[in-house]
Image 1 (cartoon, helix red, strand yellow):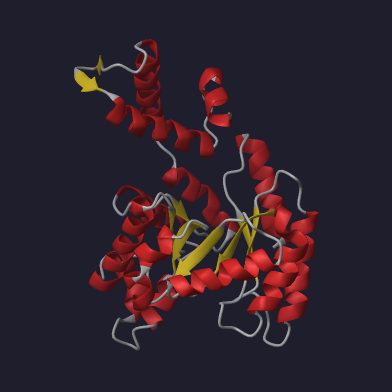
Image 2 (spheres, helix red, strand yellow; image 1 turned 90 degrees about the vertical axis):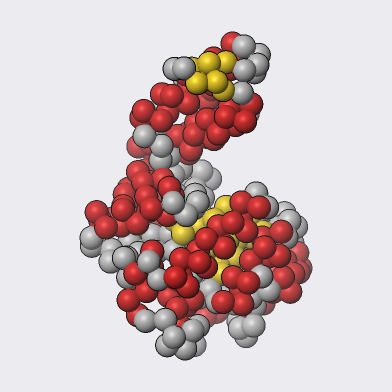
Amino acid sequence: MRKSLQLQAELTDEFGACVFDVTLDCEDGAPVGGEAEHAALVTELALSAPPTARVAARVHPVDHPQFDADVALIVGRAGTRLCHLMVPKVESLADVQRAVAAMEAAGATALPLHVLIESPAAVHRAFDIAAHPRVASLSFGLMDFVSAHGGAIPASAMTRAGQFSHPHVLRAKLEMAAACHAHGKVPSHNVVTEFKDLSALQAAARQAATELGYTRMWSIHPDQIRPIVAAFAPTEAEIDTALAIVEAAVAADWAPVQFEGRLHDRASYRYYWQVIERAHQTGHALPESLRGWLLA
């Protein structure tokens, strides 16, 4: 966890923007019997992180005996330092409401909530979950999703190639992304466990971004961060086109314009502005005039 925070600081200096969040894990990261001590460590790390850091915490599921203690300690003491709280294994809207109630009891009335969708039932209810106003992002949990099928989905569906070809997994990913976009929330793609094969990782990230509609992705190793950021960033050519079209739109007071033989109006302006936003979020240099708008 400390190494991740250090890497975040280094890349923030390099890119001029914080290009990834660090999520301090209390679920899979805590040893059995040592949950309280681990939650205390997470709290101290969040409190000691630099003011510019983007730090989140993943607590235990709402039905775990440690859930309330996790939230009371971490959110109660370090809630103002967290960019969001992540709750795993959310199955329903009732689970979201349970998590929000615990956060508010700890004094966090505006802290965003990120949830992990990890079962067929959760995928079925993804639209209702994404509609909750405190939910900012849904993440797909590949390995738990496959395991939830009791052996009906083979282990190959958890591999880099299999997760994009198995029908049940692919459908679940698409459903979850659609639920997010329907409610203006962020869909986060699952990890790729073959962490030493960086070319395969970048291909997976690019596929998630360009074919499945995901706008963020999890990493499980520091070496994965740069390939993921690169895969989700627009290309230089895409950025140049977006800048030219938006600048033409500004000059025309947002009336329709033509660019390279194509008509553009407010519908396409919105898309190209989103390209510029992604460029900013992934550390690309932009004209000062547009940077001012993005930071306003």
